Length: 233
Image 1 (cartoon, helix red, strand yellow):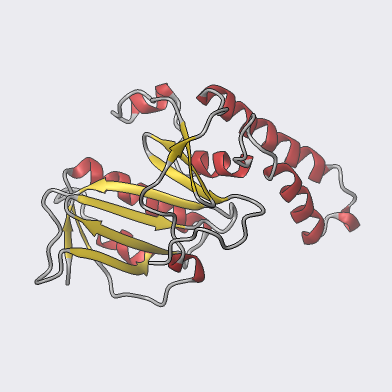
Image 2 (cartoon, helix red, strand yellow):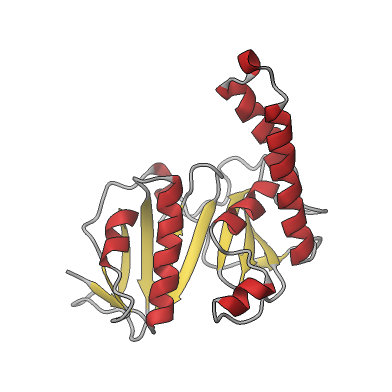
């Protein structure tokens, strides 16, 4: 069995927290792992948000498994979580699973360019809070017979598809970042012995937009670009 040696217990704890949050939204969640050198990337897709979440971790030593110098496999998020040993800073890679469709189409590794127009972190968090409050208010106002799944989905799509500021990034991307622990306040960072929050960054590459935070990234496909510029790996 392949064992990943993470840089320290903090990296292991952050990986476990990310996997736990994914499982909260999908108990059968799968994640795609890519390791090369001393870098590990974990890709997941929480179904409620229609985004791709990316959590990176530092490895204590370059990944090596026989003649293989890189790792690329889709596994059960639950099994990977169970294998994380925070005290030893290790994680055993479970057996591969048949990946969901999203796992075959990932954002490109390079070619990312900065995009303007992203508000400050506090303003982004305020937009998410306002959207959550609006969704609750509008759904609570529905008559019982009108509170169907289709109507709830329609309201959700209308609210969460709105762009953030002058960008093409939908509010649901920031909502996902907050739900997965990527969009932390400065006080939360201090309580968790993490560095203070750096400004958020928005980047584009082909059909993709990526919201980058100090704790992880959220990637979404830009509307209207169809299947252009995907990276199938």
